[in-house]
Image (cartoon, rainbow, N blue to C red; front, side, top):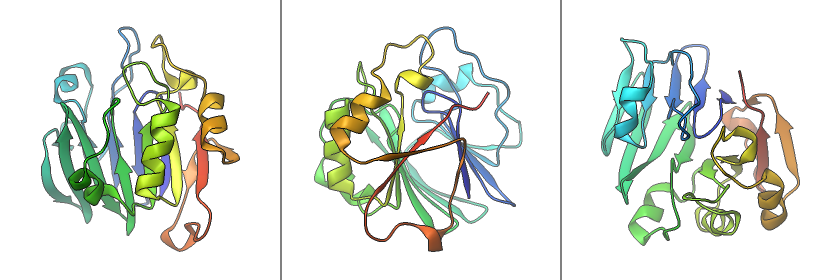
Amino acid sequence: MIISWYGFNYFKLKNTSHSLIFNPYGLDKVSKFSKAKADLILFSDPNQIAKAKLNKDAFIVDSPGEYEVNDIFVYGREIKNNIIYYVVFEGIKIAFLGEFGHDDLANGDLELIEGADILILPVGGGDLTTSKEASKIIQQVEPRVVIPSCHKAGSGKLKADNIADFVKEFGVKPEEEEKYKIKKKDLPQEDVKLIILKTQK
């Protein structure tokens, strides 16, 4: 599986057969993206669908529930008007927090995502999760890989903190990647890995 980041909370996951996109939209008022093409497109905020350009044959998920498309399993749960997702793709478990804010995760929410292999979450503050809050969530979920989103490097005109603030708070040396390639057998077994992706154009 290859994970690419296009800024904000816009991520694409793909293998040789299938692809999945999270949140193909900007959170500021100026950023525009080209057409999002994937088998499966997930929205944390259903109100953003009107802004996004999507391929017509994509399966769109914009509400809580359980879904299965091309052997990709999706579980969505709404928390404070934001849908968080737990996805199983190529046997890898991915927790995606979307535009999560400053709330604590309730026990039931943690049950959905704890033990995920990969956790993607905002770290840049503002209306979204801060570095300190993100670090607490990571401790609760105990993922093997952390991929931060919504920090200054990929936030367009949205005010957000530098990724360095999160790195300092989290205390794990990051690995910077253009795209992150991972197979289930290669997931780290001991220490958590922090992957900082560069935004794709």
